[in-house]
Image: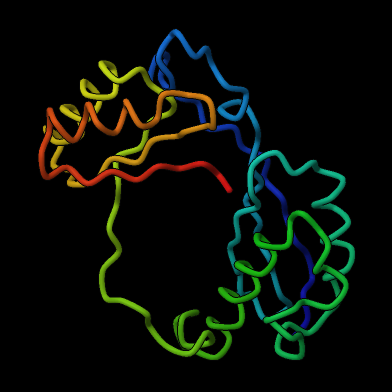
Length: 182
């Protein structure tokens, strides 16, 4: 089996106006940063899918594609793909190759990683940076939609302690995740 092509589909997922941050914090550019969806195809007709993180440029993605086309995915070390470890698109290629190899072997990709870690995956309601009052409003909406966890973006210097305190007091039992991106 050989990788015959990898298509990188550049996508920008639009967000609803006002759905990201409180007006006081302005819009953050990440919502316009593209991602690339990878379709890794083989001569056997299999297709593995991967997603490159936001804001990785197309040239970097193309560099990874050039390194992998022609390779036998069953012969690659999926824990450290040769020639790609420093490529910012690495995660997307790793995901696509694990999906592809799992399909080739007739097993779910998690079997390649030592087995299933959990049977269910929790899903959180997400928002950007908000004022404490606005975050309570977003938390109420999350709860109305059936979510039990609210994840919000935080940056040092912003009122994240006040945000979390306001939500905890107004919406007891709603779990909170501070996402500092680091």
